[in-house]
Structure formats: structure tokens, C-alpha cells
Length: 120
Length: 109
Image (cartoon, rainbow over the protein chains, first blue to last red):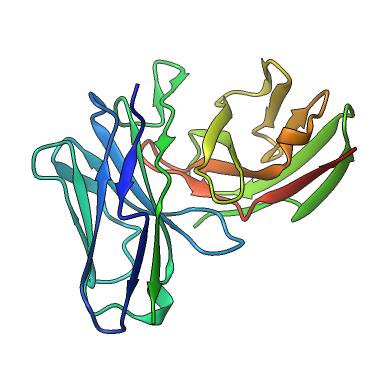
């Protein structure tokens, strides 16, 4: 079956511009996560959606970052007034349901291939 | 906050066994996960420990000691395709993962 897809695969923009990154989760997965990964680092948690609502946005670095998931499926990460420091790979993941532990079993996160954002 | 420590690089011979250690500090703990990531690829789930002990999945095993805030990933019968980065990640709450900086494993013939 289809996995998590992300578009675009690459995005080059200029400092100060606005960008949108899209994530299509696995069908039927209610939980969706955004991470960003810089070179040589592990993924850094940004935000978690359960259904349509942002259940945990504690990882968003500042108010230039915003994400939506209006119908509980596709999600868009929006970055305003981009800065060079925003350059990274933005990863999306989905899981069948939220929560790291459900009745003793792990709720595995499936990652998409990422969007490589370069801010010039 | 959270912090994780794992070796930055490990090299091992094809067919051998390698252990990648992970120590962590976290304000909350639901479990320790391991993910594999090939260059340019997406992280893929390998293993998860919520309780102390060893979990085995094929050639991969993962161990957790909550009292020591320590875990490891054991890879047996190494294959060239196992060359990748391996991340340990803690679940400080039910909803997110906090990743370490990763261990780059190089398998040599």
C-alpha cells in the first residue's frame, strides 16, 4: 500500500519568502507528526496532530511556523519569513493512532521521504 | 528536557555482531525506540522497548534498563545493506519522539 508522501521533494526559496510543505499520511492513520532534520542530526519534533487538532505543538521553534490538518488527513506545514537557519529536511510521519503506548504495544510512526528546504 | 548519547560512528565487519549503546536523560519516559535511516532516506522503525529486557526481531534485538537509563541495539549477522545511521529515540510523553544524534554504522567486507 501507499506510504507517507511529501511534496515537494525539494524546495529552494529566498530569505523572507513564505513556503508551504505538504504531507499525505497513510490512509486511515489518525495521528500525524512533523519533524525537521538538519545534517548530521536526528529528527527534531515539531508538532503532532490527532485528527484535525494540533495536540502538541511544543516543538515549533517560533511563531513563523504553523501547521494545519483541516480534514484530518493531509497536513500542510507553513513557514513565514523564511530564514537561512530554516534550511533542513522536513519529515512527516503518521501512525495508526496517537500515543506512544497503547495497551503495551508500540504505535509505530511511518515516515515520509521528506522535503529538503533550502533558504538562500 | 531530554538528552540522548550514542556513539557517532561504528565500523564492523560483514557477518559480525555490533552493539550500539544509548544512554538517555528525560523528564518523562514511555519507552525507547530505534530507527534506521539510510542516506537520503526516511527513518524506518526497528524496535521498541517499554519495559526492561530484551526484544528480538530477526537479526535485530534491543535491550532496555530503565533503572540505568540505558539501552542498546544489537545487530547480528551484519550485511552490507545494514550500513546506515541508527537513532535511538525516547518517548517523553505519549505523543512524540525525541531522537538522539545517531550512530553511523559502516559495514566493511
